[in-house]
Image 1: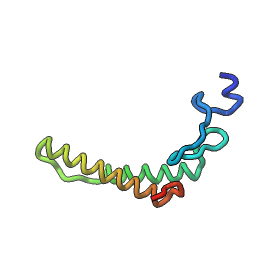
Image 2: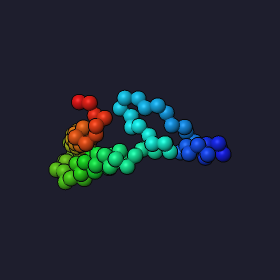
Image 3: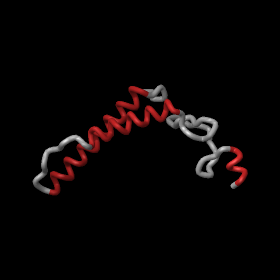
Image 4: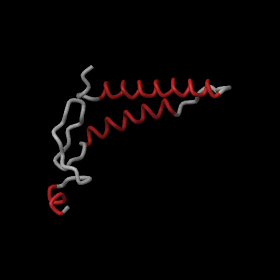
Length: 91
């Protein structure tokens, strides 16, 4: 454990080479401030859709359908925000 502290690893896991779609890590094994800003914007886009008022459902089936639609909208909003902000997004 002492060796890992000397190398600056976090969570006792050494930094890995980045694959396509993963964030490159800084020398301490953490994401950079620019990447953190992007992830915060993506999380806020998701949260904005999930917390928006929704119509009331009369049955459990309707409630489940509405929740599924809301989840899909929230994920689509988060993906759109990521693609807008991130230079790593390809399409």
